[in-house]
Image (tube, rainbow, N blue to C red; front, side, top):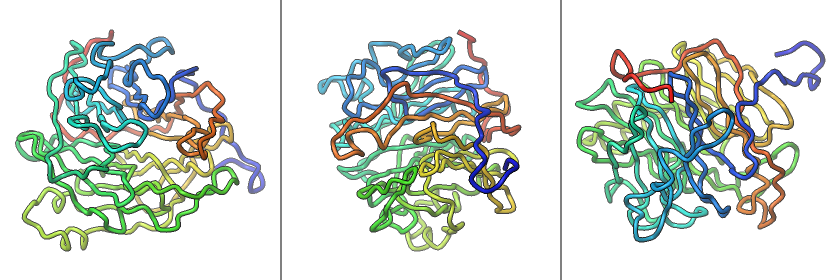
Length: 363
C-alpha cells in the first residue's frame, strides 16, 4: 500500500502487454518460455477466432484459423467459444471451450477441454465432459491442473451457471464428475448486488468462477462471481467419487470476505491473488490470511483473469465487462482498446506436475 491518506493511492506502475481494438479477452496464460495466449469468447461480437497468441503486442489466431472457424456441424472438432486458456505444468496449452454462444445453453458437443502441443501447434487431445458432470445450462469457466496425482493427473473446472459447481476430470480416463453443485460455496449469492466503481448493478447471477490450487495441491480455492467470499475444499474429497456429497461439503472452508472477484491465482509461497472487479484492483491474501492491494487503477475496468508467469509477473486481462450488452441492459458502452497488462509480484507460479516441463519452441 502506498503512502498518503486513505483514497489517495493509485498503483499505476503496470505494463501494457497488448491493446486489443476489437477483441474482448477473458482468459490469459503465459508459458514458461514467455509466450502469451488469450481467449476471446463469442459473447455477441463478430469474433474470427476465439484463441490467440499475443505476438509483438498483436493477437494471432492459435493454434490456427481453421480450428477457430466454428459451425454447428463441427462443434465437436472446432472451437465454439473459449472462456479460458491455461498452460499446464507439462508445458501444454489447454483451451476450455464453454460451447456456449452469448451465455445461451451450450451447443451439442460444444463444451470441451482441448490440449495443444506448443511445440507443434497440434491438437493432442479433446476431452468432452461426462454426461453426469454437467447440466444443459452448464457454463465451463476456468480450470487448473494437478499432474502430480493419479495416473495422469486431474483437472479442476468451475461451472459458473447460477447454481454453480466444481467439475473434476481424471486425465487418465477422460471421465469427469461434478461436486458441490448448488452448495452455498458455488452458488450465486441470492440478491447479490455489485457496486462497480460506485455504480450499483443488479442481476449479476454467476456461480463458481475463479479457481486456484494451493502450492501443495491439497486445497482448491474458488469463489462465485456473485459473492464476496473466498472458499477452499480438500482436493482429496473432490477426487474420491465414493465420498458422499455431504462429506465433501463438510470439507469446505469459508475464508471470509475478500470483496467481489472474477479470477483467482496462487503462488508457491501459499498466497492467493484475487481480482476485485468492483474496485478495478487486484488483491493478495498472504499465507497468514492478511490481505493487501497489489494493483489499483480506475482505468482498469473489470480485471478478469490472472496468470502468474515464471518470471514473477502477474498478468491481468482487462475487458470492460460491465459495459457489454450482456451485462448492461442491452447497451454497448465499451470504449476500446481492451488490455492485457502485467505487474511484478516477485513470486513463482504453482507447477504441480512432472519435474521438468516439456521443451517448447520460442516461435
